[in-house]
Image (cartoon, rainbow, N blue to C red):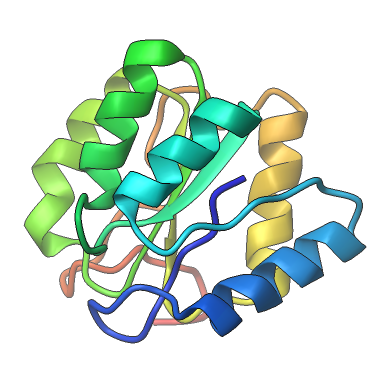
Length: 146
């Protein structure tokens, strides 16, 4: 599982990615982390996870570029994109979500938000739709959190 995230448009630092990895490992997931899109692709090819968690804003390949390369190997891989600003990618995310199992986490997010998405994927949910939909600020809307 690729884990990347950061403040604003900056990707996770290695310590932050490691914290997500530790949290998910503690929940019984087997994970790997990467610092950028190229490292993420290499990690995917050697690890072959069921779900890829990626930031949209990363150096050397953004999350959509990374997933385009991964989908050439495995079109059905489930994907969780993370971002604090979805606006630059809205149309591309909608297109991807119409074709692939995709979901979005808006930064900041809670442990429960991530675990709920992973559980939905494990139970066969989130097949080919973007959830939750973006609000006017380009962030996924969440009831009670606007």
